[in-house]
Length: 128
Image (cartoon, rainbow, N blue to C red):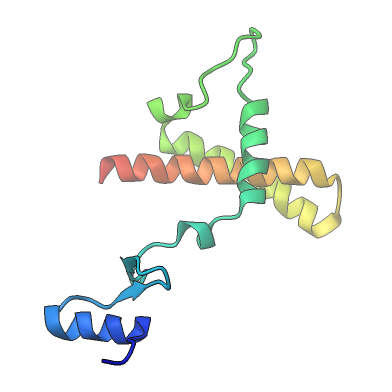
C-alpha cells in the first residue's frame, strides 16, 4: 500500500466517518479546521490593547488618591453617561484629526472612545 499524505488521510477520514474535514499535521496529530471559528488573534491588535491598558491603568486613581479596581466599570454605569462621555472624547479625536495637536492626548481620547463604546455595549449585552 502506498504511503498516504496528510491530505489523503483527511479525505479518507471524511469519507469513512462522515466527519467534517480536519487538519492532519506531518507529526500525525490532527485538529479540526478553523473554518467558521472566531479569530480573535487576527481581529485584535496587541499594540492597541497595550496602549488601552496603559490608559485604563492611568485612570484607576480617583480624586482621594485611592485606586479603583480595573473592572470597576463592570458594576454598571448608565448608558447615557457612556454616551455623553463618548461624544466629548469623540470631539477631541475629531479636533485632533482636523487640526493636529498632541498625539498622546489624541491617543488618550481614542482610548476613552473605546472605553465608552465598550462600556455602552457591555450594558447593552447585559440587558439582552
